[in-house]
Amino acid sequence: MNTQLIEKQIHFAGCNVSYLIGGPITATPPILFVHGWGVSVEPYQEMLSLLAQRYRVIAPYLPNLGKTTGSKSVWNYNDYTQFLIDFINILNLEKVHLIGHSLGGGISAQVSATLPSVVSSLVLIDSTGIPSGTIPDVLPRRLVEMLGQMPQARLPQLQQIFQAFTYNCFFHLQNVAETLKVALEGDLKPLLPQIQAPCLLLWGGQDLTTPLSVAEEFLGHIPNSQLIVVDEGFHEWNLFLVEKSSSIILNFLDGIEAKQQVGIKLDEFLIQR
Image (cartoon, rainbow, N blue to C red):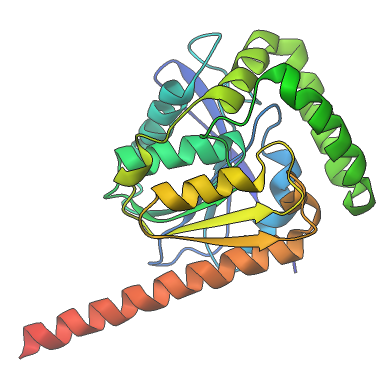
């Protein structure tokens, strides 16, 4: 059973913001999902719908990479981090399980380092944030990778990726080009030790865009982190192997929530004594 996500809009800080939301309303912190470079939320909807069967899911379109219009033409990690912090405050989210893919992972890592009190857990999927090469270096690897993952690809996601990327190139070409440079060359290593939340690094073993060596660097810099490698996965594997990606994420989040409940009960017991 897929859970329906609905689209809502809000306005703040000069941005007209669209976001998807769905799933049960409970006391458990919601999932805040941040999409990757060049696209928008649509290609992730199947995975998000599976996550929304158990958790409230909120997924904003990043400014100038989708339906959200930005207050400036070009954005970087700092800009997107502040946008996401403002978004969290506007929606009055006290705690979130923060999940980011690719560029969205780099943004999520910086948010987690900047606003540790709000982030209950962090999931970085084939994330940027550690330099992986220049644009001339990566483009040939991307071509090989795209061809390699075609057998895994699903037609709806391919159509959504193409439509989102074409839209962004047509309306936000400067930002698409500049954020690619940020994604490939931006270095967040000095911030990573400040991340306090339990962190799951979820990586495709065949990723050529942000190779497994990048994941291993994240693992060495983020204090409370673990790495799960999907051997057959490429950079966009989570879009195509949705049952596998959502199952791994849900198992991680359920474990975090179980430990949190044990901690709450222990605190109550100690207070009673």
